[in-house]
Image 1 (tube, helix red, strand yellow):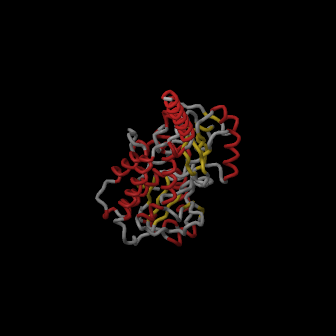
Image 2 (cartoon, rainbow, N blue to C red):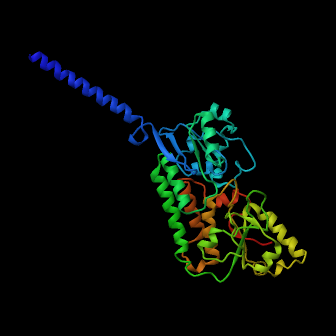
Image 3 (tube, helix red, strand yellow):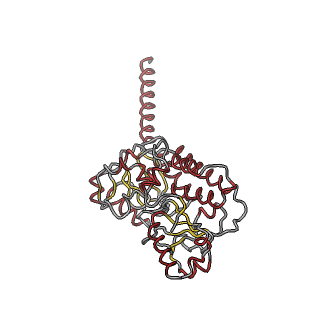
Amino acid sequence: MEKNKVFAIVAIIVVLIAAIGVAYILTSNTGDNGGSETTVTDALGRTVNVPKQMDSVYCIGACSLRLVSYFDVVDKVQAIETAGTFNTRDDQTYYFVNKATFAALPQVATTAEAILALNPSVIITSTASDIATADTLQDQTSIPVYVINANLEFGEDFNNQITSLGNLFGEPNRAAELNEGITNMISEITSKATTANTESAYACGMFYYGGASFLKGSGNYLPFDYSNVPNAIEPAANGQPYTITLETLIANDPDYIFIDSIGLSSCVDSINEYIDANTGLDDVSAVKNNNIYSTMVYKCYGTNWDNQLVNAYYVASTMNGNLYSWNFEDKANEVIQLFYPGTTVTYSDIAAGQTGNGCGIVTP
């Protein structure tokens, strides 16, 4: 009788152990319970299951590699997309900072076949404009495809994208650090510029689907907004740079002109040509009073968010310098450290290595 009791107890224990084992196996395969996958939401609202243990990341399209570079996963980039017009230019600060690493990597085509041969843990892309395109690439490769938005500006949507990427890479603290740092820096400018500036400004010379030019300006220029500076031209419906007429510029008579470094040389040539042709440009306040300045490259293979924040500090120090106690170059270096913690590359290194002269006064 005692033996039967012992056998019964042993049988119960075995069943319990088996049940616990099955439960462990089931829960270990779910992303929400410490398993091998994490569930994230991309820019298209797609739910993407990505491995927690990422061996490699492959980036396609504008800003995809830039955003990856803001996290501690640069060493997981084992190849970059085939060289095109802009993706390996030093005008992209993330590329300049990581040039020694990225320039040594093989270049791989963005076809499904080439990606399959590379076999990354995840594909990050800005080229999928809709869910069907992203799903097709994911189906063709059987590799998770995570879509980013290359055209976001600072704000809630940008912060949400950084937070999602932090979850993707298992770096939520880094994402929070970056978002908080950007928010604090913007607040440092806006909190002092509470009254609208009495002088207007025009931002030009930036890339956006075509070459840069003096008459390609932006009516949605955040550095002006943060400094409470009236923009000399109207905002665009899509928020992006657009081409205006010389007559419009002359009529609007900006007090300051800020030229994106990527188009600096051609813009200066245009200014001189317009002046020589007696168009009336020399009567524009900014030209007449020598208030023409260059800024860091804003648009080059997508938005250069790091440079844009540097530009915000520069516009603030140029047009509202009496409001602030900080030194511009010190703040520029803080921006570089926020986006690329621990880098030895400084603002002056970047300004010297990129097109134009960084942020500074321009003499046509």
